[in-house]
Image 1: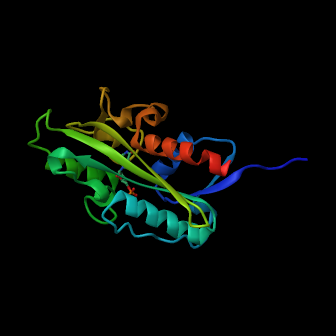
Image 2 (image 1 turned 120 degrees about the horizontal axis):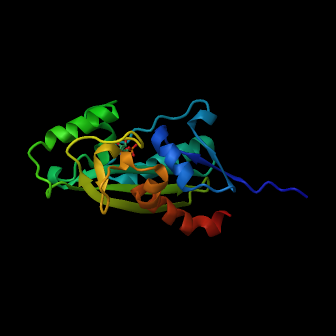
Length: 203
Ligand code: IMP
């Protein structure tokens, strides 16, 4: 008898860069990924909390209640030491509500005009949550250390990738291939950890 063992997991994000990375990091023939494009009336979740953990949990819970399916959410951001941890949880809207990636990058570079090479340390952080319809959830985190470049370079990726040079690399995240980014990124660290924790429960 044929049994379809694929499980459906919803990705609680409308960020196309994130969705692409999540699907490629967690590629698994047992998972059928669903996104906002598969549902009508998708809820808008305000990312109003002061921590990645609270924002990720809020997104995952609201979307699980809406879809009634296991849901994966993540909240991430860039922390720059010279800017005392900014933009942090406000990374997506650093240059204002509905700001574009380019506007955010420009604001960062503008704030760092006086910053020397050695002071440009930074890290991406990610908190990932898988929320189940029975209100059980799993959480994990990942980070990726690096430096902020003096100008943007590269076309791939999204967000602050064109100005972030990962530790041990000489090119920005936007100059390396997605396969390379997925070996070192904060998102890959968090998601791989999360799926190691839960694989026994869901497969
Ligand atoms: P949020 O998790 O929806 O609040 O958005 C996180 C924001 O952090 C993104 O919109 C980007 O600006 C930034 N960010 C998070 N992860 C990455 C990444 O992998 N590359 C570049 N920028 C990122």
